[in-house]
Image (cartoon, rainbow, N blue to C red; front, side, top):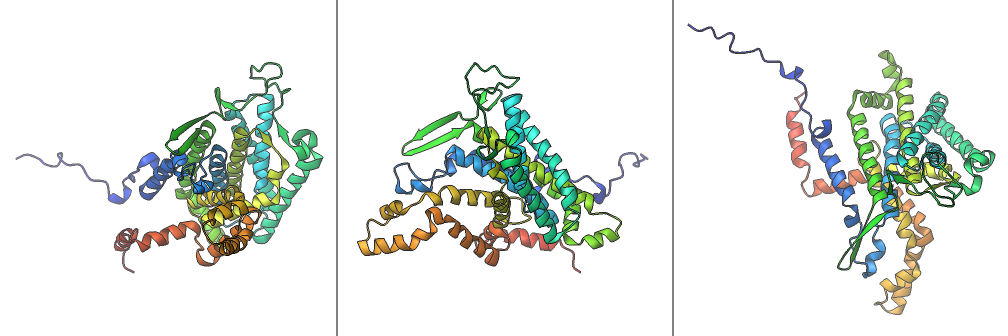
Length: 419
């Protein structure tokens, strides 16, 4: 008779087995979302140029390098702000200060040390993070509107220092840029040569154009470098959202008093979130300098801080992809809608009788060109009133309208035990 006891091993309970991880340690929808964002980002030159160059609708094409770079850089800025505002509920009105500090640190690195963008970006993040420690330590002593006002005060003080007091360091009103007299230590520039930002010799301004019929697609090195950085930043944000640290930040937002009753102090977590968010802003500032080697104090002005608040609210507070969508929407309106003028409108409605054509131009005129802020305000009010979840909620509603997500909701309900 054979003893069977040695042929089988005791099975580990299912609850104690390590969870299966997917792509880059992400599971399920998070991995899918990262892959989809990566595909859309890499294919942006095609997706943002849907109309031929000869078409009257080419006005709406956004696939040129400068605007595509702004999409991803301000996407990074908004992602970082969402870590603070979306997870902890602390609304900062002074986050542009970290964007400006990171920019100044990056430009001085390029002027003095090297034109390679990596040290400049890293130093921009570090300096912005250190400044965020100082601002956060003071501002987080208060909460609610008092916290918001304190951050706004710090940002405006930073703007005033950069604009006038620290002119030898910041360049004052005119700002800083790389000049022919700048000779970084780790560079081989000739006399009178103006240095350019590069990544191990790759010029950020280098582009390749692909002409396909009536379409012209531009592939810019600077954009793709910024896009890769944005994807890394997005991945890190996902890991923060799904981590125990992210859970503690949600606890701060939910009920700080109850959290304190458990013996946990919310202050270290809120300060950590504030510093991480500031470093994201410094990263965005460093990338802005890497793409366009100049910086001015206007990046610290209160309107820049308000802009990132709008980006996050429009996209969806506390969501992963929402801040990127909000940043893209605002920058699209700022750069595309603002360029439409009366002459363009007359071309569009030229096929109509003169009276109707003039009437339509008169009605639409206040909402385009210099009046694009009016359109943005209307869109913002509509989102706040009808779509509290921002553009992400709009996408979810459209998906449910066409039957997407219903199956997932049913399966999730089936897995939920009855109470």
